[in-house]
Image (cartoon, rainbow, N blue to C red):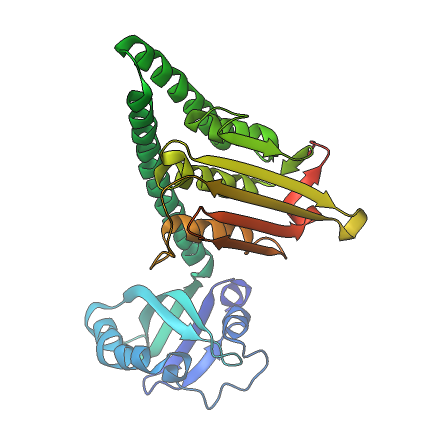
Length: 317
């Protein structure tokens, strides 16, 4: 019994009729019972109704037939009603003659694993999205290069140079030691493959080192501009301007991305993964605003956030 008391797993036992007669402290903590008297609790009280029915009709008969059952279930928190994912194992409690006296369980909290699985799904979705974007950007670069080329040799040289620049931009974002990005450096790497800096693409702002979430959003904007927006055709252009207003804890970082000269825009009918990614990367991390507008003459994106949340001033992290 001391082993059960010291365990971090949910350990409990119930009579054959389902009435609970033992729970360790870890079990009480997991479901919010604390020092609550468990004498009037039944096994079904720990589960949402549909799961309780499954325990009675499927799981307990399997324990009687096979001697055990293990699988993922959800239990409920008695105070909040929140559903908690768990790895539930059940086994019979017997007397020396093998007669079943009740049921026991050793149940493990699966919330951390579920969060990790959700994060992995998001990362896989982002990876697939970025791979598609890279292919789309390569296609866009090739089409623009070939459209403006006068001969095969110049087309080959220009295409190679732009692909090298695209590779450099990817290195900036995926370097193993990357933690934050100088805004001007990032913008130059992200935009250089799509047009000449200083003509089609203009950058205007002080030295600011970004948090990685802002860097991801900026790269996403550049990708979308090359696929659908101002950088997908001549004579489209992009202007990126940023500023820092104020000092100390009240200082704010403001960034504007402005596209002009691209294909006519209209309000999209649904949000793509890229827009969701920008929203997740910015609004979820910063106490500011991130807004995308779609006027007919070109996309406009604005970010307004506390400087301490969005960036490090002065180009150092």
